Image (cartoon, rainbow, N blue to C red):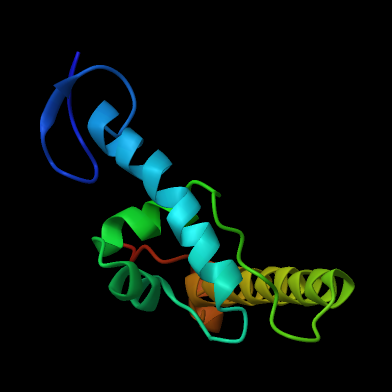
Length: 127
C-alpha cells in the first residue's frame, strides 16, 4: 500500500503514517532532544525553542511529543490530584452546559399556542 509520510510528504510503500527514513531520524533525534532538555533544566521550553536550539525541523520535535517520547510536565506546584480535580470540574461543567443546551432546544421547539389553537387545532375549517 502506498502512503504519504506525515513528516516529509514523500510516498512510500508500507504501513503507518511515518516513512522508515523519518522514523530513523526520530530515533536518532530523541537522545539529542532528551539530553538537551536534561542539560537545561531551568529553561522554559516549547517545541519551537527546542527545534531552533537543535537546528532541526519543528515537525520532528512535535512528532516526538505526539508519540509520547517526551512527557509534558505539570505546571510547577500542581499535583496529579489537583489536575484530576480540575478534569472532574471541567467534565461537570460540560455536562451542565449540554443539559442547558438541550433544555433550550426543547423550549425553542414548543410554540406558544392560543386558546383557539388548543381547542380547535391549527387547521382552519373550510366552509
